[in-house]
Image 1 (cartoon, rainbow, N blue to C red):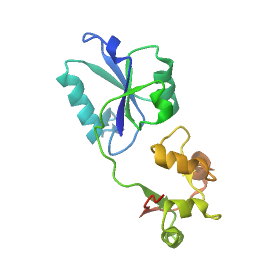
Image 2 (image 1 turned 120 degrees about the vertical axis):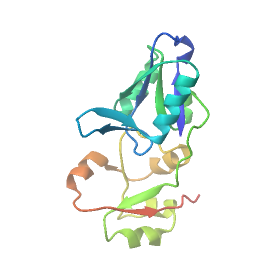
Image 3 (image 1 turned 180 degrees about the horizontal axis):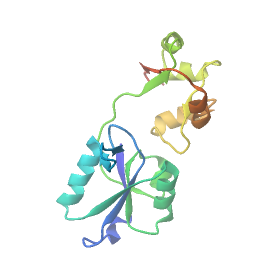
Length: 180
């Protein structure tokens, strides 16, 4: 995961730097306290907040939908950052990236109960994406890194919001190795 930097050179120490994010618990997310206050929490949020303070800047954090964050960085109208973005060739055309602040855990596939045997039988991401019965559901505008994005580009994708409205019951996580 990378902390996407854009227009940082024009940020001044006396002006707060705007840092935008989309929730990704437990890394960074907006939490509602018992008293109703909204507080940003997360391990990567803590790292970013400390880094900003260490270099003597002040920052404001804003939770926005993923596409709005990407578009704001692409528009380059103000000094701002996007917290927690994968470095992709497309994004490198309009954004600068810091060194990684966090290494992600291996990806998992989340499925309804009863589907796990099909996932295990597939054995690899390539075989899973070729499965004619199972289809991935993704949030629009989200990147999973270059390799997974390339694999998913040819997959039959379900609309995540439509799926969320239609799925009942608990879900299971199944580790999946991304084999080439």
